[in-house]
Length: 267
Ligand code: HEM
View (spheres, rainbow, N blue to C red):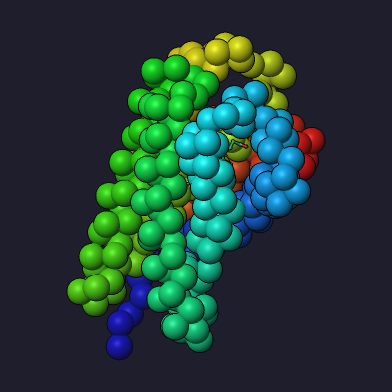
C-alpha cells in the first residue's frame, strides 16, 4: 500500500485545483451563454448585423467567406466551451466512456478547426490589435494544436496517463481567449480605465503581456500542477496551492467584471 506523504499539503493541491476548475467552469458557461445569445440566436433569426455588437467588422455585407468563417468560429466557440469541462470530469469518463470518446473526437476536431478559423480571421479577414495582436493570438493557436495533437496521439496509443496530462494542457490552451477577456476586465476594473493599451486600436504593451500570461503561462502552471501532485516535498505542494488560490480569487473577480462589463450588456 502506498503511504501518502504530507496528506494536508496533498489535499490542498487537490482543493486548489478543484476550486479554480469550478470557478472557471461557471465563468465559461456564462461565456457560452453569451455566444449562444449573441451569435447563435441572431444567426437563427437572420439578424447578422447583430454580430457587430462587440466589434463593427465581424459581419461584413457581401463577404461570404469571411462571414462564414467568423460564423463557424463562434459556432464552435459555444460547442467547445460547453464540451470541454465534461471531458475532464472523472465521473463522466467512468460512467459514460462512450460519451467521453465521441465528445472527445468532436472536441479535438473543433480545436483544430477553431484555431484554423481564428488564424484566417487574424491574418486574412483582419482583426483589431494589428500585427502584434495577430502574433500573440497565433501563439494560442499553435499551443492548442500541439496539445490537441499529443492528447489524441496518446489516446490512440492507450497511453492514458500522458493523454490525461495533454488533455489538461489542452483545456488551459482552449481557455486562453476566455482568460484574456476575464483578466482584461479585471485589469480595467482595477484601474477604472484602459491602462497600458489604446482602446481604439486595441494595441499596447499591456495587451502583449496579457497575451503571454493567458496563452503561454498557464502551460507552465499545468506543468507545476503535475509536479506538485507527484512531489514528495510539502513546500512545493503548498506553493502551488497558494498560487492557485490567488489565481482563483483573480479569476472569480475577473468573471464578475467580464460578465457585467462585456457579456450581459451584449446578450
Ligand atoms: C479556442 C477557443 C476560442 C474561443 C472560445 C473563441 C471565441 C471567440 C469569440 C466568441 C469571438 C467573437 C468576439 C467576442 O464576441 O468576444 C472570437 C473572435 C475572434 N477570434 Fe476566437 N476563439 C477561440 C480561439 C481563437 C484562436 C486560437 C484564434 C487565433 C488564431 C482566434 C482568433 C479570433 C479572432 C481574430 C477573432 C476576431 C477578433 C477581431 O476581429 O477583432 N480565436 N473568438
